[in-house]
Length: 228
Image (cartoon, rainbow, N blue to C red; front, side, top):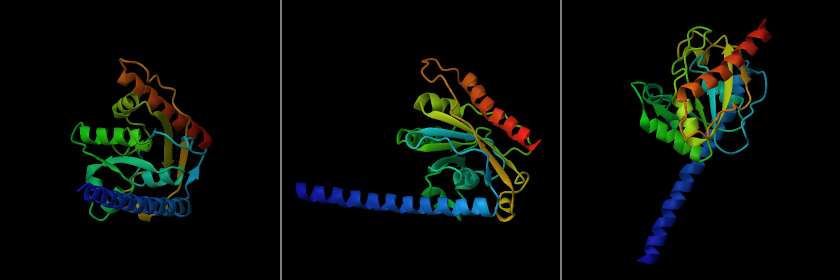
């Protein structure tokens, strides 16, 4: 009986490794294709290189311009990013296989989604990079919308470093599908790690959220000055 149990465990482990390996191959293939697509078709310009650490957990935050944003940002990141995304997009049958391959985390917009928060924490505990758009929706103008406190909560609970980015370009104002098929010009700016106080036993999530938003806003100002 012991031998049978060991054999069954080995078979399950092998199946799991096979599934993980296939997902890794698909994710890496999508990443490589996305880089060619972003640079060649959407003329992505990266102002400075992505500063994410080579390993270990990290949170990447950026403003939200269009549904194309994750593809453009991933193209400039050497590491795979686990994106938190709106559940209504994740549930699209034609694209769900791709979202599952990159371990995207669906988030219900109806209110606090604790299951999504737990999934993000698990990803960080595994040493992954979690990508978040703290505005919670696509901005329709060049104004930076208020940030939700979810990023601050994740940072404090996981102790993961937070890195800001700012994205801009001609992809604004396009509907979800058009932005993928119409050639754009996009510019992406990364900032250094945000120096957050994550050791406090009584964290001020509002203050941390303000600091994170300020870091993205400073990149926005730098990008504007370069265009002037």
